[in-house]
Amino acid sequence: MSQNADFSQKFEIHELVARFADLVNRKAMNEMHHLLTPNAVLDIPGHHVAGRNNIVTFLADILNKWSTIIQAVHSGTVEFVPNTHPQRATGRWYLSEFGVLEGVDTNVGGVYSDEYVRTASGFRFTRRRFDLLYMRSGTSVTAQPFPSDLP
Image (cartoon, rainbow, N blue to C red; front, side):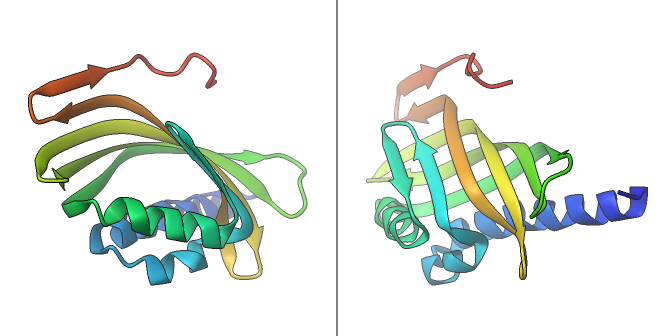
């Protein structure tokens, strides 16, 4: 892969991640389908959700608990899986969320570990795993180390 193609494809994945956060912030789950493959998987603490439609419904239910939410994506990395067809990549993105969850001021920090596949429409999420690193809800604080099972 040429250096320009590599940069262009990494930028495409960066935009995919940014679009996901934008849809969360706007609670626009009707647009989330376009970012996921039909057999996508979402893993967040306590939940394993398989299938694009199930993920969209699950996220909509979670977002209904937030009267206000801002999801901000921070640093991230993208690595291409060599010699794969269709083209595949992995990524890791740090993020923070803050807002009002069920009437309580809440701040979250964590990491998404992603898998992407190139489709006819561009790169799409095939797997997202979210690991909570920090959460303050009201006066309660939870902090966890980086997950030991992630590379």
